[in-house]
Amino acid sequence: MGTVTIGVSIAVPEPHGSKLQQLRAGFGDAAAHGIPTHVTLLPPTEVDGAALPAIEAHLAEVAARGRPFPMRLSGTGTFRPLSPVVFVQVVEGAAACSWLQKRVRDTSGPVPRELQFPYHPHVTVAHGIEEAAMDRAYEELSDYEAQWPCTGFALYEQGADGVWRKLREFPFGSTTVPPQAGRVESGSLPAR
Image (tube, one colour):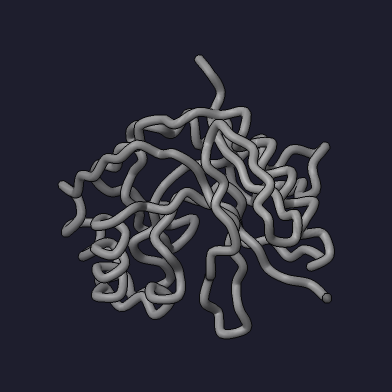
């Protein structure tokens, strides 16, 4: 099967997801339409395609141990000058995101992954574009607000065309084996 590039993330639901995606494109970020609006749990990671069933089973176990939690976005932040990124801040749900990403990347699992930078949950709205456009994104979204109940996360694969596509959702709190191919689905966050 060869290698594939995967990622795990929490989707920003509608209407917020498409609004932020349109704004990102409007700031001149060419990658905007190929990347669903999200909070990353596992950054782009190359894996052997044959490992996908084990990865899905691992993600189902992670999801089954969790529970839904409130997510709230508010205002902007940036990783500049270290990285050319402007983002909307996760102001509620960050601790739960951190818990999830640690378990997704756990060294005992099929996708142990060291991070280049400390984990900081966020929603990217501009990446690698002109400084003036980055400044505009930072200013225009400084009072942005959105909230929703986070009820799971998803596994994505990046196609040869650079577009990220959802492979499977993992809702919190349950483990189910769907009838197709014995692939596992599931989901949820730690009880507090």
